[in-house]
Length: 270
Image (cartoon, rainbow, N blue to C red; front, top):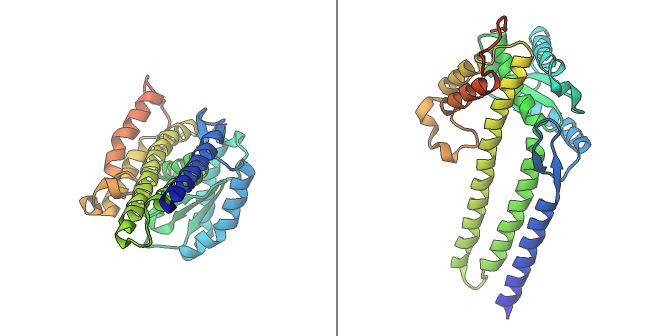
């Protein structure tokens, strides 16, 4: 009888999680995609602003070089103001982090974008900086954080239901099923992350080109990231939240060809 009750409870939890996820659908005005999200743009902006100070603190705070920080903001705002990103409600701001060792850049929901000094010093041109920032703007306008949150809630509900259905307190071996369910959920979310990264690369090609930057600079960015990551020492790509930089180059080249079938215009900043 206890097993039947657990099974029914598990089915109900799974059903509620699935219905909640699939019923929360919105069209992304920037990409035109139908997305499963359960928060408003205003909530995204508020969440990003709230998290920004804590995230900056994890990387040693903001960099004291005001000139470098101002140049970064200038490039970022040029990308926003020259493209459809300016028509979105997001409050874009660009921050240079003090961490000289970590090679990283990331975007919080709502438009707060960060790049470490460790990555900035590796970049060789303004167009490469624009490529990195364009990629992070892509995450924001594509609402990847909101999508990830909705997917995480779905995964949590489904794995929780599986754990309830399989776990038997009188049989410790049944814990293996719950652990396996949690691992599958984690891997699912990681695959979503890789898809988001590739979409942001494609959006960055569009954003940089529209802002007057040569999108081919992103290819060199991938080479720099590959060198910084240690190449093959990274381990299997399947276990990474980001695609291997070397494997993203072909995707970027394809996006450039698709965006500019007649060839890139002249006069782009490289």
